[in-house]
Image 1 (cartoon, one colour):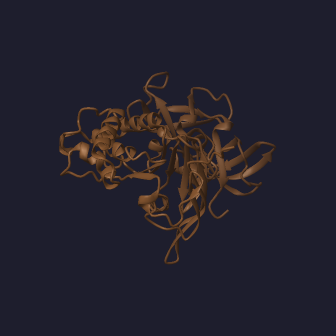
Image 2 (cartoon, rainbow, N blue to C red; image 1 turned 180 degrees about the horizontal axis):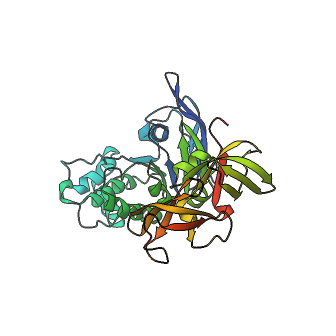
Image 3 (cartoon, rainbow, N blue to C red; image 1 turned 90 degrees about the vertical axis):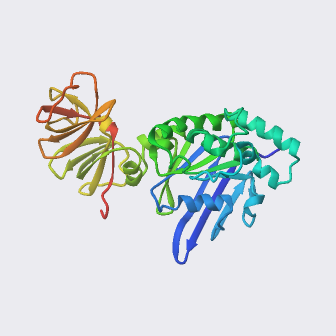
Length: 364
């Protein structure tokens, strides 16, 4: 009976540099054919983790396995992985076909087989007729696909991507998010993608690991990470959020009652995360979770004055100062009753108790 292993498994993986712990006992599994993103701010340890998976750095402790086989001590060129770098590292003096076939030539593959495999992989990435072109004759998006083709022609078990969209302009980045996910599905190869851009991770990933100070704070689906963040860091880093400083007034079963520092009472139906009566807390509330109304009906309702309206395309970002002085950011569609809202207008804000999350305040 054959045993099925995840494509990638890390167990208590740790990396120290002269007394500084860059990666701190990280454990996770990535099943075959999935898109796994490691999301975190600069300096959180995600690049160090990726370099350990690739074999460019050795872990201080822990284990790293690909398809059940430990990679500890295995050099980079002997690992069944390939890596796409942020600046792609394509060779400008080679045409596209030679770029894609470079790794095969290094492995001593016959010329006839190289030609056949290069043609097949270029067709799969949607570039069937460009093998003779120079690198400077193709677009930025096409260069991304060439870099992926150069990796995929080697048939790796795991493809590592180190912020490959970071150097692209905004419009091309948006397009390439869809392209990358489509390519990953077409090849059915495990992608491990690192980024500091939450929108990239949310759009493309099957699962996301949110990293902070060398550790994973949460691993989950994009939906779970966005709507049910495990920690205050995840709630604040993934997506936009209003952060309201408050104190716990009561804990009634699954319902928490808090009072903001400005005096607004809030009812929240969410995990208590260890909070108790009298404890200082931070409440995280998404701008899109707040509704505007013309009357004081519902739960968590407060009247307020519009402090600013910022147009940003599909929505406007509206800031409302409620009667207690709290400022709330609201994502407002361009159509509907409040489409023509102006600074100084009086409105009512309301939000469902299930839409907020709360955590102990720093130092509480």
